[in-house]
Image (cartoon, rainbow, N blue to C red; front, side):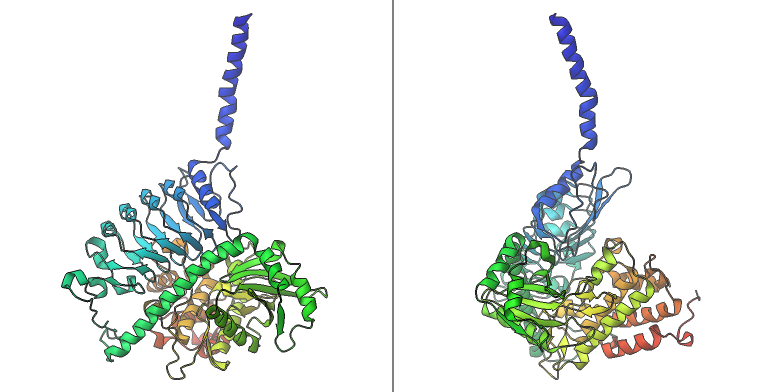
Length: 598
């Protein structure tokens, strides 16, 4: 009896081995998928882009932001910029050893850059700029022998520039600007090819690349010769006093460092405050002695009614998160709907900053600007009450929705954004530089008309003669080249950002889309390449219906003027509006070049 029983048990075991285990393996996620799920776990908040990353999928190749090799199914691109991702970057990313592009820029990541990235030896492009990353630059990045583009600017990185980065012989784009790096910049190997603009905005760096002599080389204080300012057309040095240039440079650097410190503080603070229990904090705000301030009678409710409604808001009412806090949908009993932006107070300096924002916004009423109706002032926060715009942001409409915007709708959005920005530049008193024009700051009403939003980074032009401010702000990809180098914002830097916005609307691609950023280009570089090849019309989104050739030619002409590398060659926003009205919205064929010519 024992032998038949053993045979039965053996048969059952064979059945399990042949059928059960293969079925389990067939449904298990791949090793690359496991690494990405670890990345997801370490990400504590986002705009929802990671919700479709499911462990039951056999591989991650269909996940948003992930691209796989068609044959091997190994992950080769991970591109998730501009998704409000917050948390640390998981070291498991280092297991994606076929990865060629890692683009996590302009999010809210904090903590150290994982040294395990040095295992991704196929990596061609690494973009981590515009986060709150801290600690030192891992020397292991010097093992990425195929790396062509490395941008880790606008973080809070400290320590020195690792000499191992000089081993990156294929490096053509390198940017560590606006951090807290110190010490000698190695001049060996690839690092000798980069100039001051790759290092600007750091504290106590020295080296031949930035024309600063290190103390240990001369036995005395570091010295820096005045930077030459090239003439934009002839390449000759402009005249000017050294002291004036040094003062402007110092102010720009200090402003950049202050902003990075502020961003780092807020990144950590937002995670602790907003990522966990923002709704409970909101209830505490309004129950601790809040008062309502209304602008021009824009809120036809009593303070008691508004506070009572605010006390009912919870996580289910969250519709987004801005740079300074969470945004809620506030529906009143009479059916009116508003957007509520919660801004947490931290100190008097920040409080004055927000007071200035409120003073500016509360006094501005314009068709193409978001209307601030009032705010609730509590001991711990300010709750700003805006008009609610049901169609969300232009960023969402262009990049996240299945329904495509047709040609006329895109033109109307561009026109609305231009008029709103022109009003800020020319008709406000005092005039305002926005400094962060981008698609996520263009909101859309129910008719898909544009409203320029978020003046939190705007600065009044207090100097009537220079019209210059030196506090660095803005979003990578939209920034004018002279602004990134000097930190000097003018109306012309806004015009450049608007030109980038036009190209984004035309193409349906973000300014740092993976399709061209892996080649070391942004959207302006891509346009310039297409113009040289006489293929500029290829920039148009193939999904856009109703494109009119004559309007397209004129709109491209306006965009090319706006993104000129020479600020003086860019038109004013008043002129942009005139060109859009006369040549784009109502084109005259005789005014255009022959669109059919080769």
